[in-house]
Image (cartoon, rainbow over all chains, first blue to last red; front, top):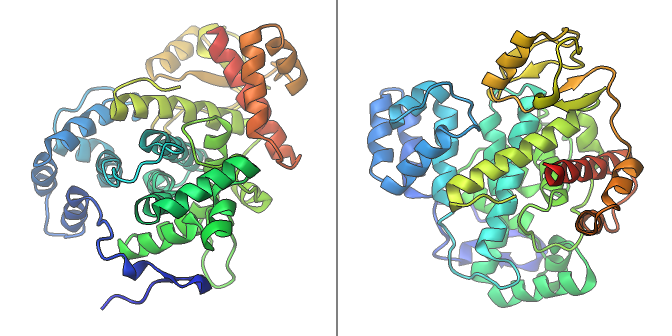
Amino acid sequence: MAPELTVGEQGFCIERIRDLPSLPDVYSRLIAVLDNPRSSVWDAEEIVRQDPAVTAKLLRLANSPIYGLRSSVSTVAQVARTLGYDALKQVVLTTSVIDLFRQGQDALLSHKAYWSHCLGTAAAARQLALCLGEEHPEEFFVAGLLHDIGKLIHMQYLPEKFCAALTLAARERLTLAEAERTVFGFSHDQTGGLLAQRWGLTPIIQRALAHHHAPAVSDHLPLKLHEHVVHCADIISYALGLGSTGSHRLPPFAPLSWELLRLPAGHLAAVVAASKREFSQLTSVLFGYHES
Amino acid sequence: MGRVAISVLQPGMTLGAPVFNARRQRLAEAGMVLDAGKISLFQAWGVVEVEVQGVAEPSLEEIENRMAASPALQKLSTAIDERFYGAESHETLVELRRVVKKLALEEHEG
């Protein structure tokens, strides 16, 4: 039995949402295959190929300048062999998760504007990870992509209250998290952390979603930079004006996170420029047009 | 030290920081003096800009003055300022605003 998942004292219980969306099927099955040491790259190919839309976007993304391949790839197996399993998982999640939560769109925060901000954050998180020499930059991309997923839960399951929060944020020039807490007592970062737990995402990703507005250093956990990187990437994406967040001011700024990254002088400019380029390439593939 | 677009790199310039490709493979070290072959290599790998020694980064004030010369750019500059509304004046945020405005200016100027 799953542990009880509650959000603070407000009594909101995510367990009450009976039809909480599951992870995209193609992604779940891919993870199961890649986690099985007896599986081969051909098993991964078999699963992904069953979803032609995901396969087509996967190949377009893999052949885009984001990955800088010198020769093009034309099969899922080639993507796996050339870019590695981490990148394969990241690209499959990216191409499949965007179709989740299509219901409950609000005029104040469209589906496309929402995902544009998340793609900008994902790109910035990956670029920061690359700059820091992190071994698995795709893990940072995924954390960035999903960091605001709690907003979609609110949009879908608490549409009236969420709309009130969006309106309050616009009227009072607040961050959406501040408005959500005022209207219904908790915010999307908390809900996102709970959903990540429900989805069985790694504890690092769970923390990144739950703490991206208030990253911290724990005395009893090894330092992982994900929540700090996503915090900084969220601010970069907002500062670049990529998509929309429902907020009407810059997300809260945590100097500690920027200090932990220790970006060498001048590297912020490189990260910001590279993030913008990667964002444009991502939206070109995923939305079919160039967004800048 | 400032960032220079690959299209205006000249042999004889000195790199101020290592150069990487999109897969984070190191193509050149800081301190290397560029020649035509190295510049071609960067182009082949899709490098867009590099850090070069002896090139000063424009200040926020200089960038804003350039943006003030065009109504479209002035509007863009104001929109960027709006995104930083109420933000504290931490040096990182000041630098981020400068970087975002510089990027907007460069994109506008092509």
